[in-house]
Length: 113
Length: 109
Image (tube, rainbow over all chains, first blue to last red):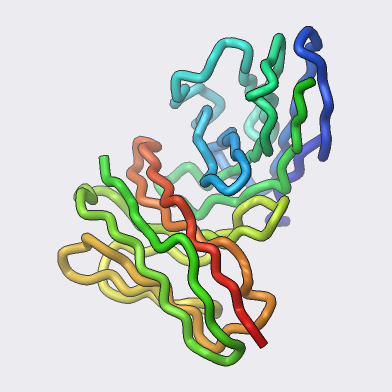
């Protein structure tokens, strides 16, 4: 199984809402990533978990809160977002051994109203 | 950190070979070069990865000269379904990842 799944596919939320994005992989990968992608731009790295520990936080605002409950799951908790946070949020995973053969999920299209 | 530069767009025709070059003048010794394909509203899909010289798999080849300051993704005999955005990515084992801006490839019949 080489699939990374993400839920939900689409999410519309108000600026005062709290919501969560979920990502799951069953490839035994030990590194998982959250990216944000705006239209016609490359993915922008937000967070990296390596062996369930937060390794990289690319100066992301605290209204985004990542969580890695176990090696297969990755969550992104959202609170008090701004309209400019509307984007495609992508999850990816790699084996964790220095390879950048990232497997991406289909993404969650987030709209903040 | 390496900065990556790639053409904004390219056109080609079905059956042709397409070469997309990415410039990464400040690439570090530990950096690998990876290429991804992305269709609209989908996540990127891994194509190929290399460190130096030439790498080939079932879908593409990657050419990296000795100075590693550029890399060229070669897609043999493209079809309409290869119309997509192609990204080069330079990264090291400490998760320092630099994505290119992407090349929009349009394949015409």
